[in-house]
Length: 253
Ligand code: PEP
Image (cartoon, rainbow, N blue to C red; front, side):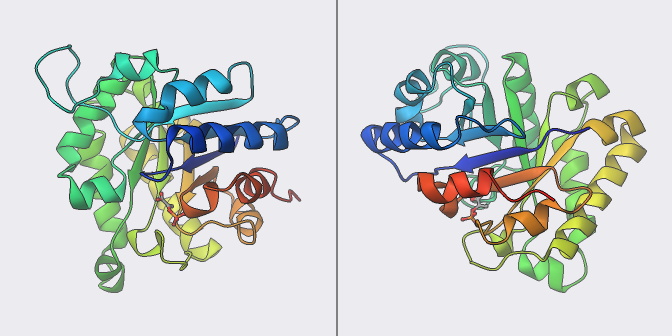
């Protein structure tokens, strides 16, 4: 039985006070939630104060990225895994499509970041997903398979058991255009098949695969009914505690 995860990515949106206020409000709205794990990813500057505020709660804190570097040193602007742990995080988002498109996070870089995160005992939430052109030309599954192959290179079955995947079709991120539950399910099933073929059936059965791309309170329940969708990575609709808590507490049937 895979426990669902609902994660919110606050991107570059909140000052420290805003992050702490939203987290405080969210905490009170989800105190009784235990059907899923809840994760929020504030900007770096707000990680420590937000995780302090959430101490003892059922909400975990993630960073939105980390350095490939694992030793302290002269790497201006970089933040490494033990600093992220030190700020109270348990999870880290890796390979978000915005980082892939704007900041040079290739599959090889994503692979190094996953290894760095695992080395610091952080749970990587690894993002994969095709662009609209790739989907329209019928290459979506091939592109995602290549992302899996290169991003997960040299990882063992035990490593994979410590990872969460997030399928985020680039055309659905921040566009208001969600993949239909059927489209998402098809890709999630194909990802699970890939993991089963390349890593092992046991890992494939345990691995949690989140869907991301314009998830809202109105569409989460339909997505969560699909057999291979184990949660959501939410951008825009996670910024406000009220709407994020409605996603977290989606109607289960
Ligand atoms: C995201 O950025 O990971 C995301 C899914 O954004 P949105 O929910 O706004 O589409």
